Image 1 (cartoon, rainbow, N blue to C red):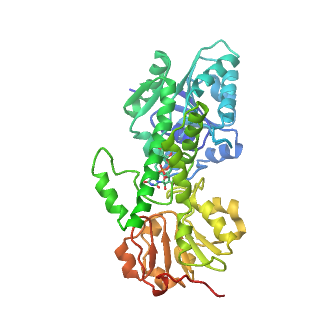
Image 2: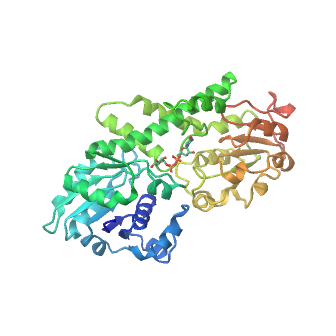
Image 3: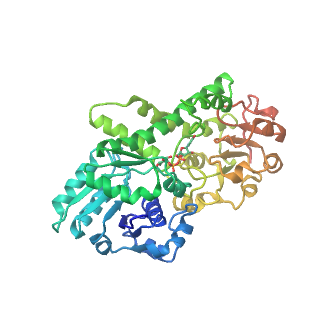
Amino acid sequence: GCDIMKIAVAGTGYVGLVTAVCLAEKGHNVTCVDINQDKIDLMKQGISPIYEQGLQDLMLKNKESLIYTSDYVEAYKNAEVIFIGVGTPENKSGSANLEFVNEVAIQIAHTIEENCVIVVKSTVPVGTNDKIEQLIIENLKNDVSISVVSNPEFLSQGTAIKDTLYAKRMVLGVESKHAEMIMKKVYDPFNIPYVVTDRRSAEMIKYASNDFLALKISYINEIANLCEIVDANIEDVVQGMGMDPRIGGQFLNAGIGYGGSCFPKDTKALHWLANFNDYEIKTIKATIEVNENQKIKLIKKARKYYDSFNNLEVAILGLTFKPGTDDLREAPSLVNIPILLEDGANVRVWDPVGADNFRKNFSTQVRYCQSIEEAITNADLCFIFTEWPEVKQFDISNYSKLMNCPIVIDGRNCYSLESAEEAGIVYDSIGRKKVNNMEYSTGMKLSVMK
Ligand code: UDX
């Protein structure tokens, strides 16, 4: 049977809340701590403060073993294990900002009354866990012993619950047998293979994994760019590559670059860490550079069709950095839409869940549409930034029926070239032949007179 443990989790963002709910699902008693009282009040009513499939259901299912509070003293004082899942945003220099992690560490040191294991889930630079342990020990108020464990998180937004309950591996960076034993008591009910190592290696596993995935994406984006030039087809290329198990077919979707809360930040952080130690990781430097160019690739494509975006009606499908989330962090839409607005375009946007977050940045400067049809009606140009299922399943013949000028520039390869051909549109996608159904797009640029 499972040893039920008394666990506290600091931070109720993606990492903290998903961890807490999954620990409760596996039988533990979990107290979630956040300084934001509004968030706590929401969660007490059974409402998830973040948009993540399955999360709210699991919160309700396990409500008996989940407590939400802003009172960290109560939460920490008798906890056997305390998880730290607060954010480590990017500093201007590219380094990770550890202010929130350190603050929680001090709060823990001031409040714990029992021996306890402190588990760092937040992504932190190599060596940080050692410093956190030092910081806690120096600030302890009571005569207790602690140890810090590095336990990096690999969840993706949109599939966070599944990624946590059925993780491929559980990385435990420990410096004592006792800490290892406690962690195994916590995680044994998950039945996930362990990688037990020292703390520094565990911290490195996280960065090396994320940055490798980012590298894969930048690599395939460059191959796609070359495919466009030499008339090859990226999708067939990837299929052929992916069948070699040494390469693997995942994370080889060419597109308009990676966004989100992890890859951009973690590539920069590793690059920074290397530089700080007088070393340069050239592959990661290139990964970052390629991604920045890739993000504005669609605009460059569009300039082949129009002299200027001034007064153009431009439809944007998808604002979030990927489907299944309302998160806009580092999304390509955020760099492209300002360029279009700057050039005088009239921008209409559609996104099934990201519009509210977008409104916080751009409020009145764009028109928000309730449907794809509404967004593309009478448009002169359409950009696809996110491969939402609604976009992929959209009847492609509607573009020619509804748009003023059916030019679709697709950053996520949502449609087959055959269907675009048949639909009679101009279809410019990533790493594939252009579908040109209009005479005037063979060289002569369009200009709109209104
Ligand atoms: C990622 C990692 O997958 C996860 O393990 C880590 O813990 C956090 O960072 P996430 O940012 O939620 O998760 O999303 P992910 O699905 O990995 O996508 C990241 C970005 O890469 C998205 O912008 C996506 O569009 C892009 N991407 C992904 C591609 O362009 N091509 C691909 O093949 C895969």
